Image: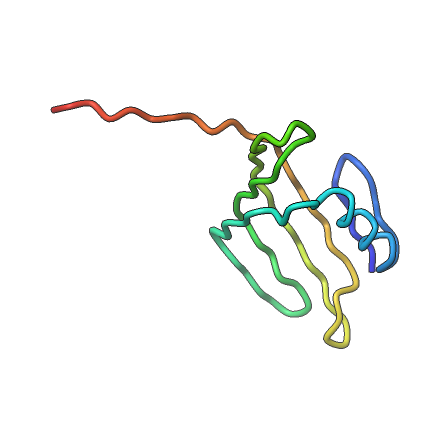
Length: 94
């Protein structure tokens, strides 16, 4: 298993992934999947993630994950993740 955070780092092996998740995802993130596309050995997910940052505040991201499978197992993940700002929209009376 190889997990590449495009523009950042690559985790190699299941143990490296487990260690990263144990320290990064102390609280499970909230995922919103907008699109899930599958073809051949690939599955692509597009959506948003909300996690807690170091200060315990909500941090928001948009993501595109491209998963590759072989023999029914995940062998590669390429993750494109961009921090986003959540804007409060106010409604106006018409």
